[in-house]
Image (cartoon, rainbow, N blue to C red):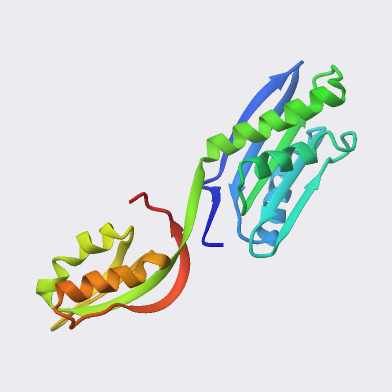
Length: 209
């Protein structure tokens, strides 16, 4: 998997359906432990709520979980999980807190309300597309250093930091599929004297070229 989608930040939004209040919370997480800790945090915050329904998907652990939290089976946790899956999002946890308003919604009404609350929470947290990148380092002259920012940007990358001595050591990342083409362009700029070395790989925000 070279790319995946997650959410940018913690966020919440809410809706009211037949006097029941549904509060959707969404947060980016990378482990099941982080997801469970967040769920417990929301449960503690809303200890007086009738239900705290949740769902989460964790990429590296290959885990997805949900809970109806005593709502009728299939009417709460699955709609929240489906909201995550339909957006093709991972590394994300959603908790939908419900304060009962005294009017029964029925199975269909619950599915629609929990699904809508989850979608609102995702929209508030904003989608974020990540891309597998090569994290690289290059040593070069000050003259060539002046050309690097635009060269790295041309291949969808970003400079992370630089050290200045008699030469310049530059650390940057760019999409792993573009490293060969980048080094070819760098070789042309340096008359074959300089090439970037890949240090490792990691995921970064995808840049539109």
